[in-house]
Image 1: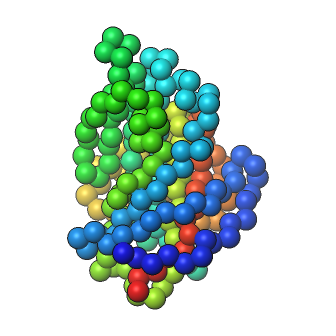
Image 2: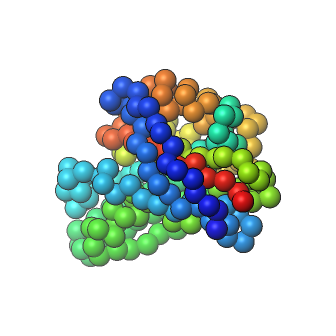
Length: 204
């Protein structure tokens, strides 16, 4: 288990690009740093009602690991989720896609689907061997609900097909300083966009 420090203070930018501070859990699982936590409260009543409309709800997550005081992120991970309510079967079908591949699950309850769309559970970030001891780190994430542009999904899917999570060839939307991505960067057109930052943590 990786020990957490006090929640890092975040200064919000403009209202539409403000960064939400959330506390996450970080663990060493088989030599891999993983993150767990949720932000269910950001999924408002409008989005909840839309779930049963028969239209797909798509969530795109980009998760960045930074060392405090560093420049560009150490690693970036991406995930897409697509939830559709099957009006005939009266159940939800959720498709998950990340570096581990594509998979589907079915759910009966709205709450279970919302939990999946607004959480990371033991989500792998990088090998523990690459995490320096006694240095402070934090994770930041951009979560987009129903991106208006197909370019957003195409960019993430290209990223997911990459065999490594290195910096080579990365676009600015994936690799840039925390300030450039989370504060100064314009929000792309989506039904909702959330910018989230974790507390500081370190490897004992």
